[in-house]
Length: 138
Image (cartoon, rainbow, N blue to C red; front, side, top):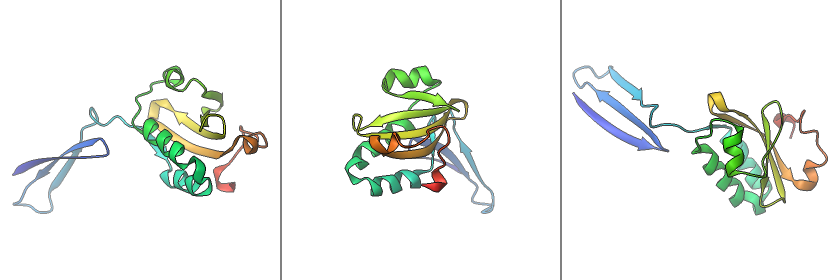
């Protein structure tokens, strides 16, 4: 029996291999070391980066900063992102590339989950109702 440690995307896990029983493999995720936000969905970020290539680097920078953040509430997030605004239903608006683009997300701090709702230019943002946007329609 051997124990191996592996790391990937800030995820630390320990795998127990029992070579006498190949079917028996145990994976224990060490949550004390894995404190990351789950961003739903990375595919959506990639699609917005494709649609808005000028904003792609700033969008990816936001993604990697948030996914590794340890925010417990909106006040902690606001300390790092002073221009972020809460707009109801746990929705937060981020300015991307200064004030050129807006990103609307829903954050549930208790579950460490971020759902991408909408991304576009500031002008496009002024034409939407931020409370009712549905990402499946964009």
